[in-house]
Length: 267
Image (cartoon, rainbow, N blue to C red; front, top):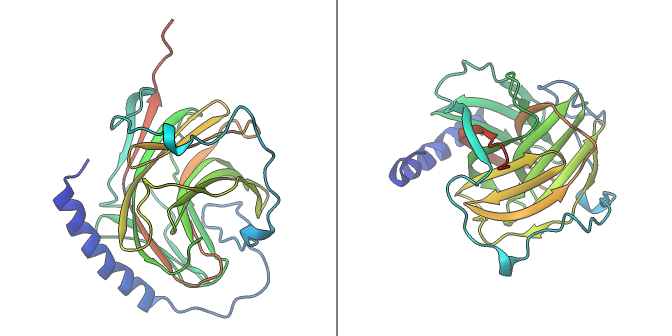
């Protein structure tokens, strides 16, 4: 992990990069056609969260109550071996950098930066390398522009075609679990306020997810903030995403992506 001073410097450089990306992005008139999520370069126009069908209540997978939340070590106890570290200093892993009518995904200043400039725009990129079906992923997310409470960013898990899960962190400091079974958002859990997640912009947060079988546990800055059970998709690619809702401006830069295997359970 990088020292705090380096992170503050990178956050300042990120703001400059974000400004250049936005100024260079020329937006063509958007059509009403939805773009599928069938490829890593897909841009998806998805419905407002207020119109989404809620996922059913799950007695075995409730969010962790704030009173019971306690800081965890730098790595959760399930973490095994480090199998991937990405510092985004070069695109040796072939991240699908691109520009669309909704915004751009670019690599600069040692970060993977999403700059969105359209309402209801979603950009997601997937790692070409395969990862285990069960694991632990952590990444630093720097919010640089965030002009609506429910603009969101986070981690894509078990993506196969246009089926995938997302752990979404919102600009207002909340988190939720999302399910895609087609080109649009099919369902989502309720947003949960997360005091350990720094809201607004500029802000830097270390977000992480443990995914094991059908259980997903999200962390924000070392604190377990959400647990959810979802058995429909068993394996797939890992990625990152950003999405706007009612506003047009969202810029978030990702850095220090790490993927760990899960340690074998004790006999």
